[in-house]
Length: 198
Ligand SMILES: [Cu+2]
View 1 (cartoon, rainbow, N blue to C red):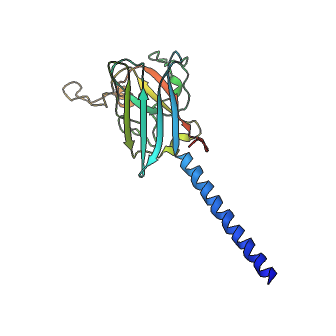
View 2: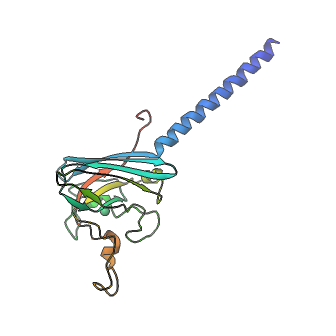
């Protein structure tokens, strides 16, 4: 009889451990699907923050910014999680060249890159905020080996919308890469939201 109870206890303990393991795995998975970034300008001043999370099977991106020039700014996720203001684009001199091209899970053109987002509108007082949902990637895809970064550009993003009356052959290669958003004025490395920081 005693042996039977012992066996039951072991089975119950085993089930408990499995449930605990599943709960931990679930939490880690949820954490894998959340990211955040502190956005800084080329002088190292904090100009914003970003949150990335999974919501209803889509990716929700929330940004708040301050201290930026008013107007529309190209706003994209770029392919590498390196925000080095001293890394200059050899063609344009723009800082944060280190963040690489637009984040893309395939080989799309602008504005179909996975990381292409609506432009960020900055108000007269230098603040801006937006919440965007996208189904072009899951948050976990941002945490590949070389990471990813959010970039705010100096100029509006033309979304490669170049009417035929301006360019008979359509947008050129540069426009299809960048949307002519100009220099990179702010950058934030997107890091995984750590477990226990929920
Ligand atoms: Cu960009």
